[in-house]
Image (cartoon, rainbow, N blue to C red; front, top):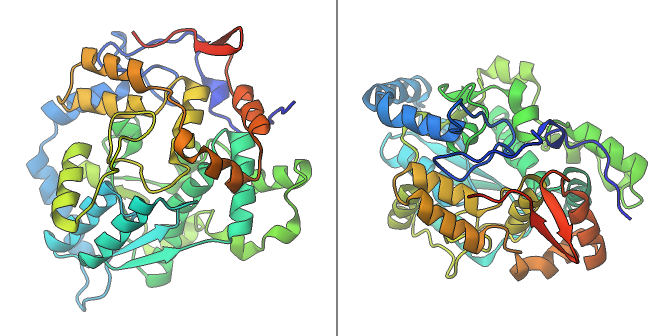
Length: 397
């Protein structure tokens, strides 16, 4: 029987009593979320702030000032945009180039296993005029690291997150480009830590808690070397580790990198509108069918492993894939809470069957081990077993 260690430090901080936001469909099991005295989550409070208090004309002026201070005078690249070819990064990079006359370089940390539509969308963005560097790390080591992340962090996809956060800053250093623009501030847009929600960038000192589940890459690898028979020192070199970690704070400070800049600070963030923009300007295409676990077709469709990131999140926190779409669309005024509840009832927690065999093969595990790991991540205060089936103790209502 599988037993995990203690590397995932978010789960130990979860409140034992589940509370659901009265406005949207987020619970207090989301890491770092804050609820006010009226049981309204930080995501909804941020939406109130955006809708009623932010002076978007002033934010536009701030954006122009920032870009003018970084604009190249000789036609060289002057801003890095991490991009999977998805709707959000395409929106950001295309706007920067064709509206604001910057010269962005898009950089891509390769998905674990590209979907056909994901690769097509990246190629479409390049054909639309957005130059790109695609980096694919040591595949043998990445697969073992993904298995380690699945077992010890409850998220095989975390290995992609490490590279997606860190690699662009190594590219920024390589090309001497201090401005790195991401899409949205996820903590603000999807109900997380409200501190910094009104800031244009996130410094590297908070990345470990906000993006890395409280553990460093070195801790993770060392644990694997000491406790896993499938990982040994011959599987990787220092160069293989480099891009899974951020550059040193001194390196970034010396170049003038302040952190992850967020386009959502300057632009009111509407994922549905980003999709329409990307479709119109680069030929971005959604999935032909809805994404498993939700009702939408246009988000997180680049990697065959995406669905398991959301499924394991559902197991760990009682919050799956549908909640992100539904909660944001409530705040955007696209659907009502009652409509969101109906969608959650129908799709939330759906098992991502389509790429299940690919997931098992990629991690080199069997179904028995998969479910041993999954069940190890079920918190007692969230789940109860009845016969051979599990159910949430406190589903959204």
